[in-house]
Image 1: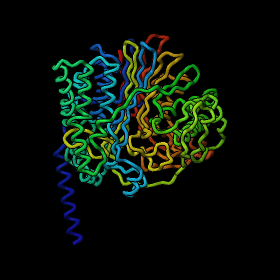
Image 2: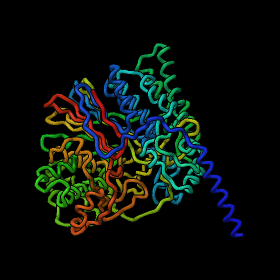
Image 3: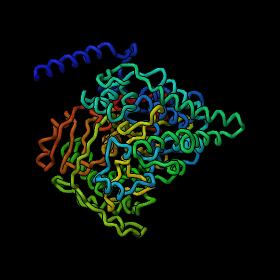
Image 4: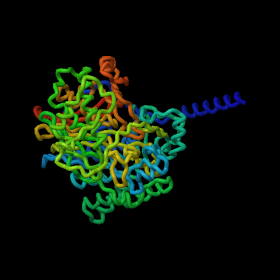
Length: 620
């Protein structure tokens, strides 16, 4: 009997093998993956674009060439990235955004993260037996944000129509695009997990595996997203119909938004939730809105570092840089053991405060002025020590430096208990967009989300898993509350120099985002590196706190190093008490920073893209 089973298994495997050989998708002729070890900085005099994919960069450039501004170009790039990088940054999920308006000289933040549905409570999840938010589940879906972001950006700062700007994305989705190394990496699963993925989420498998669970996609293969293209056509048609009726541009854009949040698209989303035991209602989608807010600002020397508010981890970047301002980092030597130790301590101290205070400011009292106080930064800097912290250091008390008074009686808990959660990681990461136009306007935008929960059948829509950045701990600032936003990891950045736009930058990478951005900034500002060399320099990342995603894995005292850096400094860091982990060189687990810098002295723009992914910078 055992022999019969073995023979049957061999026959089945052979059939699958030969079927795989006969089911290859066509390779794109002449396709060359831009991922490489080194690149040159891109130089332009009029405009500059840096995004997570060359196709998106080209789409943005075309918009700029045709008279569009940075917001128009960013929307076009975002929609293309939702196709080419859909496994990492899908439509219609999170899209936190910063906009620099040259005319006013001001930076504005747009709230690009959805909220929890009204039925989602900690009690509900606890009664269902959950200790942490589940993955691969309809319950991990946050209300979608990017359609709201797109419409509001275009209404308030754009010049072009949605139907015009979505056209490159529709064309890319219908005609196909070459699968790149990162897409292949993100979709790489062993055979049994691909089968499990197909059983659990058949429509996701249809979109990403083309119903071939036995087949692993190859680099350069033609890849299409036809259902998503059809969804966008319906949204664009709604705008065209509104314009034909004599409605204004803004009214027509509102019709696009209504079609999504109040019309047929909301109907199919709610139908999915009703069938799968989800929590979304028509009322949740109808009442959803983002909104403009003032960005967070910190200082390092003559630079002002801006970020979204505490519904993201964005304020970590200015907090860390203020902590390091005045420290003689240059004398330590770039990426020396002492330098890595010092920067890591600042990061870990800021993250301790992130875990204690950061949450949706509409629901959580956040002592933001205290956290960004220079006196508070100085006080936290006094906690630097010769050895590694070994675990997440204690949070500080920024209320002492705040003009606000805490209204909350909640005492944040320091729960470091590890939990496990059943999941299939299919797609991951995030992507990024940075654009400066010929008028001097700029956009910094970090779109994200992955097909790890059921997609909406027939639409190509991925609602993501951002509910997993909530905690089922009522004492945590990112605790689940109906209508609240989780504290998400995507965090675009901007930097002014003496009040003028100097840089727009960001990266994918979850908890590493702020760390990669900080290292890139210091490489340029402290060590005077060419911006492209600053992007390519080896990186480190602390993991000395619970991960932002459920189940919040915690590795006390841990630090990861790219291989070349590991070879050089690991022994010294181990002597300081770190648990040191080695990763590959130019590994996208360390982020993939894109940036556009304003070289005012030479009257030019510089664009840089990270070879850790297939990101691309180009300008004119």
